[in-house]
Length: 342
Image (cartoon, rainbow, N blue to C red; front, side, top):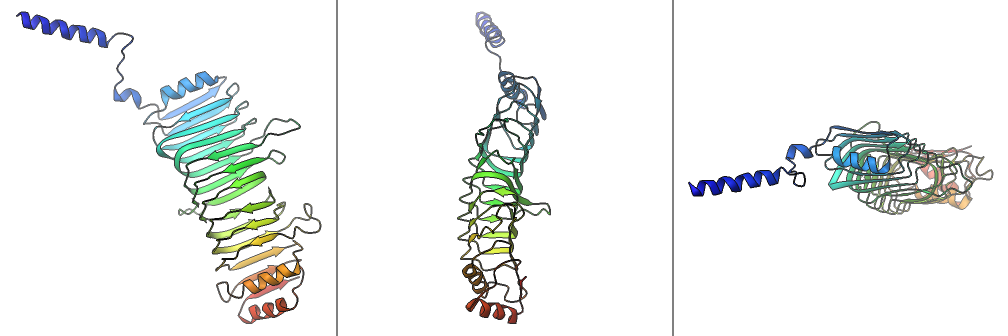
């Protein structure tokens, strides 16, 4: 009997201690979080942090940060893979940090209409299906600080990478570990940049579905590891690019460089470095006023680029070839290719 009383007293003490305010034991169900998390309205940084900590868990699929007025700094710590993360229409938001866990996956990441945005940093996220960043208007001040997008760990953007900025608001874009863009099957896949860029840092990018840098204010584009562009590289209309360095590019189905006279009335005369190119079915160089030596060089290079016949080389508004260039032009035509100058 004495032993039973002692055991009962020990159990009662344990239960009372466990239920005290200072010792609340969280069951697994308590950590699962909400499926949909909404950060909205006049919420402060501290309130947003507390809400995210309380509501983001293993069940969380969608996180929406929208229509806030006081939020300036946002830190999101994901627990599992996320289906949709949308950060939109936040008037005073300046800094965004997204932290994954165990190299999480985000299906769709959208950041747009955040009027004072400056820095976006993404950590420990290995894969994103679609990353859409657009129309983020910075403060209307005479001197703009550059916008920075830094994604430290993303290796694969499976479907779309689109970054559109406003002219006059420069950007530094950096994905230091990104290897592939848009290479999973989807008819809407795209890699497109537009706006003013101080730098585009993609040192490990090897394959991309496309590369559209039209309307992009950057003079030099260098992608040192890029080997394949499945569909087309395009720089047209208002682009001011003067140097394209793709030293390892082997495959590009279509290659378009077409100047806008408003930017370079006398032509940009771009330097295009594609020494390893082995396949290109359509090559267009238009209104760039490229040196005759460059035109001759392209014609000679395409003698050995596949396919051997059926290629189209369009030099609209360019200087006519001379000397060996004329011979190479005729050789290409005799091989069954189309070469256009007008």
